Image (cartoon, rainbow, N blue to C red; front, side, top):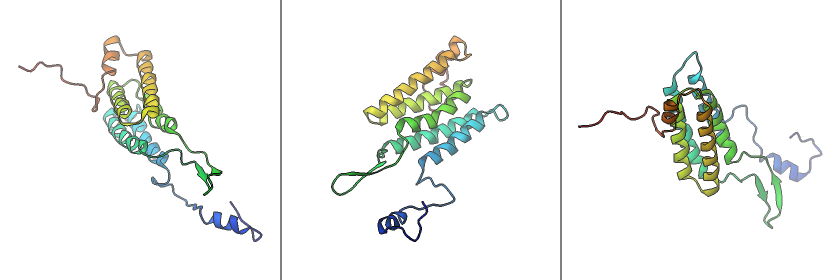
Length: 179
């Protein structure tokens, strides 16, 4: 917003409320933090690096960020005056947008990793338990999407079954019997 010398006082006051900087911050833009974590996971899953454990660690942090974000009012995109009249509407991401940003690329690039699929399932299941009803519905819908991706994968039936096991580390449990 550029104001000229003929700006009215309201425009001048409004311009004081807008801060423009050359760097994004986590506090101002939680999408930025998510994007950085997703980039770490996707790079770790690249054929050149092939490090699913790092991707799983990034998912740990993504889950933590989403749990924190779920406690926030994401509908702050509307501002009302003291009489309750809507005065400002700004486009803000919703819960579904955050889920898509957090998990789509990891799901796509990690589709050949049982470890990543297990960790994604665990993150989504835990997230569904910790958020409210409407948000849980979206998380569960995403979990179904993940299961469909596993079903379409090149995994054999045993690997598909293993990929559907929720596991915070993604590694699975030992199959040895304790004496």
